Every structure is written in structure tokens, then in C-alpha cells.
Length: 253
Image (tube, rainbow, N blue to C red; front, side, top):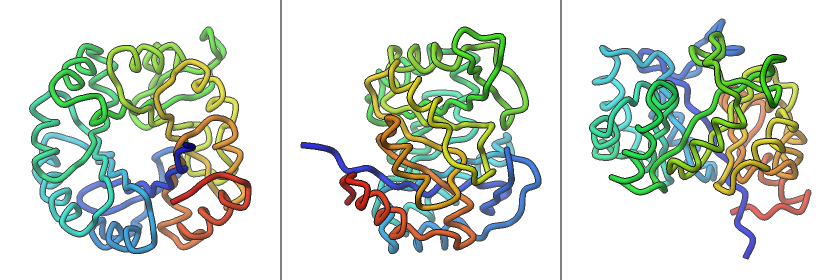
């Protein structure tokens, strides 16, 4: 049986509000996360991803409270990331209502964290978020970045995705930082290259601008497609994206 392609709105949250910019800069307010989450649930989203992009120490309590309120409003899987650095952080987020947890910077700093989370909670809970950009000095031509794509992590993106899968990640959230917020389309080469390295699901993120951008991402190897600003600002609806995927021959829920 062919699995349905998942359509996932992403809520980038800072100081308790959904924000969106280009490559995480020039952020503008896009609304209340709980209200947006409820709307997307009603509109037929398959999952929601909630990323605390300013995840600082003082923001953690706010995040748990917002996650809890969001989880009460939606009946689809909720992935939460931002500032997750320990098994205890994952436990707290799952207790607050998250179904899955995304790790990024902390896993780069200490890859064993991936195995620790997978061992404790199962790999179905763990999403490895990979912020990748093009870089001439790497084996694959893609490197891993941190700090919203501004800082090189000194890792080859394809090798890191493969290692994350080996350590126990259940999915790869593949963020194309060069495309983020540009609305010029997904980075199809990046998706194809990562798909060739891993057998776990790949979620394509970064660059969606029209409904026509989504089917090629699936054809390149994505199991799910994620977008933010096109949904938040009303450029596209979940239904329009699903209709485009279905018309291209991809099963949707």
C-alpha cells in the first residue's frame, strides 16, 4: 500500500507568536499559534510542526504552555522543536501534548542525544531537523547550518542525515535554507540526494510558493511536504495543495 503524502503547516514561534521571514530574518507576525493550529486542523492538515525559533532558556515555560494549549485544540499529530537538549526536555514536551519532538542544534553538538531519545521513547517520536545549504567545500555540496542558516556546523548535510538515521531518528525534517521563505520552489536536488542516503521518511521544507511546487518535491523523494508563509498569509490552502498532489497522482488523506 502506498502511504499518503502528508501536508504539514509549520508554526515558527517566537515570544508566543507565529512569525515568518526569509531565511529566518525580517520576521513578521503571522498570528496566534493556538488559533492557527485549530484552523489548520479544521482545514485538513495531516500534522502540525511547531518550532520555537527563539528557544532560549526563558522561553521554555512559555513553549510548554503554548504547546499544551495547542495540543488541546488539535486532533492531528503535533511535532515540537526548539531548544530540545535532553531526554528530560523530550519527556516534558510529550507530557505537554506533543506527539513527536524535533532536535537540531543539540544533536549536532552531541549526536548521542539522538540514540538516547530513540532508546527511551522509540524512533517514531524523534524527528531530526537538518538545516542544509549549498556549500562548495563539502563532499556533497551541501552543509549543515545552525542559527537559522547563518552559521556553518562544519558537517556535510548528506552524511549527517545518514548518521542521524543510523543513530535512531525516525524522520528527517529537511530544511533547504537557501530556499527558505523565497517561494521559489523546493530544493529538488537536495531532496533527491538525501532520499538516496536514508530509508526513513523525509519531510521537505523551504521554498513553497505555489501549489505546483509540491508534487515535484514528492517526486524527488519527499514523504511529506511542509510550508509556513503560504498557509499563514492565505496564499494557499491545505485543500489546494492536496488537490495539486492528487492531480499529479500522489495519494493524499
